[in-house]
Amino acid sequence: MSDERVFMKGNHAACEGAYRAGCKGYFGYPITPQNEVTEYMSAHIWEHGGTFIQSESEVAAINMVMGASATGTRAMTSSSSPGISLKQEGLSYIAMMELPMVVMNVVRCGPGLGNIAPHQGDYFQATKGGGHGDYRLITLAPNSVQEMAQFVYDAFNLADKWRNPAMVLTDGTIGQMMEPVDYTTMPWMDPPDKSEWQLDEFQEGRERHVLTSIWLDPADMAVAHEKLIEKYERLKREEVRYTEYLTDDAEVLVVAIGSPSRVTHSAIRILRQEGLKVGLLRPITVWPFPYSAIREYADSKHVKAILVAEMNWGQMVEDVKLSVLGKKPLHFVPKHGGLTFTPEDLTEPIREILKNPESPNTLWHVS
Amino acid sequence: MDVVTIEGNEYKVVAQRPKSLTDKPFTYCPGCNHGTTHKIIAEVIDELGIQHRCIGIASVGCSVFSYEFFDFDFISVPHGRALAVATGAKRMRPNSVLMTYQGDGDLAAIGIAETIHACNRGERVTCIFVNNAIYGMTGGQMAPTTLLGMKTTTSPLGRDAKRIGWPIKMSEMLAPLPGAAYIARVSMHDAKHILKAKAAIKKAFRAQLEDKGFSMVEVLSNCNVNWHVTPQEGVKFVEEHMTKNFPLGVYKDVWEDEKAAKQTDKEKG
Image 1 (tube, rainbow over the protein chains, first blue to last red):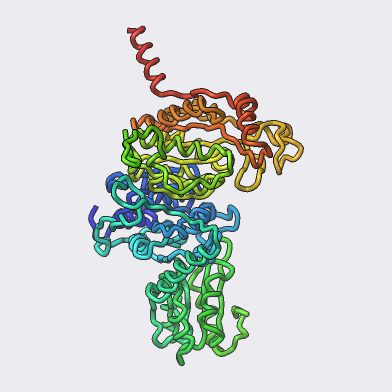
Image 2 (image 1 turned 120 degrees about the vertical axis):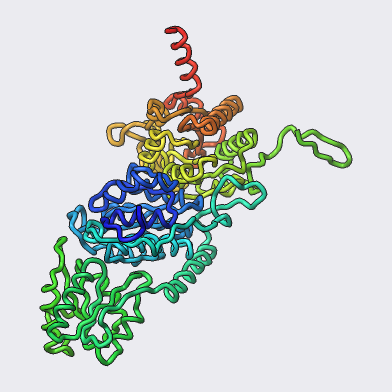
């Protein structure tokens, strides 16, 4: 396969990103709308010296990744919302044992079975820990097929750099759509050396390696916690990523991720033609979240109001609220049930907000 | 054989702590069979010369700290998931020797799906399944293998088949699966049976080393504390009741099957 401008589906591109990062193990279970990942892995991971298992459950899949990662190998799993819920137990253990691995969530609509349409209802789960205990995943949110490949590739590197599980949080639209991908930004690489802690068959003459998440004595557990927290604090300082689109003079700053951020681009182009100054800040890492970047806009003179668009009842908006700290009116435009945004869903509220930008009393105001 | 010198005299060592155990004293309850089970596993690993190739998977239950006692690489994993973790590790490192050490709640209740599917895939891993018919670590609740009539903290009037079903027989369930290479049930109630258990554990590791398939040894064990008996009464209960409900023996032996198949070929021949 050529590395330049390949026309691919998002879910397939994610696999190609994984291969280029040296992923040698994929363990997964079928669930729509991410089946293409499992299928593509089953067909192609062998060509890259890897192994595929269709597991008996999502629970088994994440634990297989735990075993693979414990041996120092790059491994991943993927699923969609109900399946990701099942992986939370394993992710909690993986986070405490500081095992680097990648999990991708091609989010569909919930709660319960919901439906197979795109949604963003798993934002809290992805960014606040998800399983039991106090931990975080490095979470990247792609909004294009190019980024599906790139962010899976990046997630492997970040996971190894920080010895922390990383999640790629996308939605059904991005997973299912096709776009050209340029792989030249993802050079083939061998997984880094992890011989200092990995479990392997070369134990003669070295200390044995033990991976565990249990410290019965609270004083010992506190030390383990502090080590994690120190890492998380460094991550918050060093790995925050986001992009901006026409924000320099924006009077309304939109914050959106995933497919709604693409619709926001269309809405901004329409509004700019009308002379309305609207821009987009798109978090790439939703954990660590770009609090201070958004705060700077909230502090700026040109931004009069901030608007968050999400395909849920309001999850990321809480992080934006923590960034804005009441300095500017904050508005929220939701989309429910697996329905997707149209540009009009955003242009209308923005026009309305701009009529009286300082007023918090618009229909979409977040109380 | 090792030789030690004490006060100028040389002595042959005829018995010693296996190399595959750490120096840490066992923290199991007095009279519990876990210690002896650990010891014979470690002896087998020493005898096969595979200590530095072994990766152990510690499960949840009394054996949660087994990683402190075995002297090779170890990971402690979520309740019931040992065989899934072992699968992932073995597939990535086929030259490693994978051992899971699991109790009845871990393997036969919460982890039964992982158990059946690891066996059915013929994963080249060795599972030591300690069946003492009770949840020991959590304080004596009913296990899937609790005998009928047996009183536990969650079956205070005794296990009633009508309400909660029968003790589950894992060896009998797994043996018919084509992925199984060696499945045996052994007991730890006296010296003779402990030697038999050791032989079975050795075969189970051989099945993995010879790439034959999945192997499991179900070890009938005691729980004096939660059975509310003395250690002597405990092993007597294993001998008299546990072995009756869970018959000892080899349920799958890939080498015997291969021999039988060769014999049939010859007769056809």
